[in-house]
Amino acid sequence: MLEKFDIGLQLIKIREAFFCRQCNCIATEKTCRHPTSNRESMSMTEIRNRIRSGIPVPEIMMRPEVTKLLSSRHSKQSFVDM
Image (cartoon, rainbow, N blue to C red; front, side, top):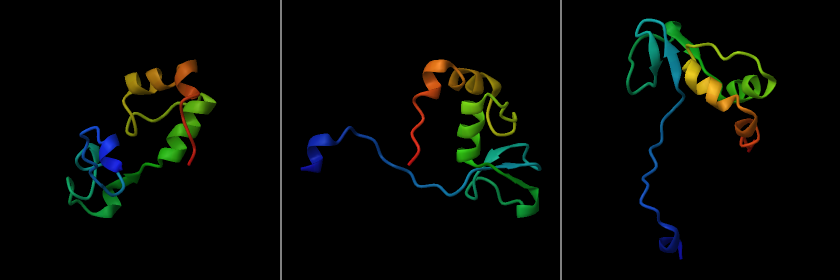
């Protein structure tokens, strides 16, 4: 039954993404081995709430052009809380 809905995508499970102050970029445990003291946590719930409320999202969490796109009136309605 599920084969009927196969669209050819392969899911890749990753753990939490974070901003590494030493790498100066967004990373995961797989891409960055620096100590946890260098990490700035990124909550996707916090990012969604900031966008919905019009509160700026720090550039270390999301590129400004992506924030601008998601902040459009149409995009705000597309977030779904699970």
